[in-house]
Length: 104
Image 1 (cartoon, rainbow, N blue to C red):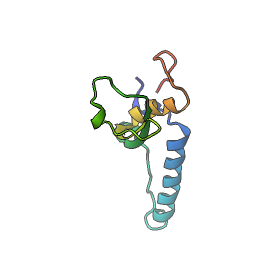
Image 2 (tube, rainbow, N blue to C red):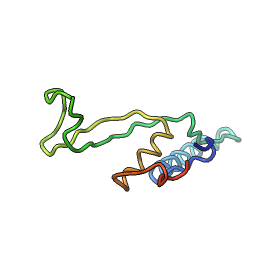
Image 3 (cartoon, rainbow, N blue to C red):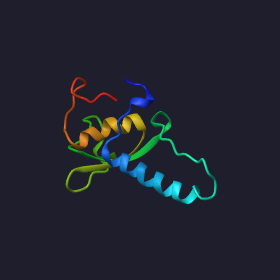
Image 4 (cartoon, helix red, strand yellow):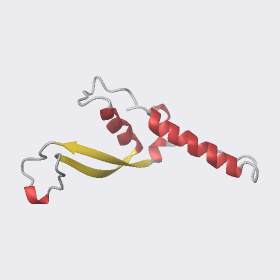
């Protein structure tokens, strides 16, 4: 795995960061000169809403599963920024191999 400075964020989190950065700097630049906002992926975390399809693990009791009528299971995952980058790759592909995954 690469260093923290070599992390490539996908479009969605990068747009969110740039939007927040522009808002923050617009609010604070006039009051105190020299403010900067630096993205540090190694220190970050994210909450991702994930939808899982299928019956779930075979050993899990059916009454404990929260499955809606279409068979979807919704979960909120709290992950590191690095984990978010990997998980977001599954928005484009159903399966990924280590060799085919981008270098972070």
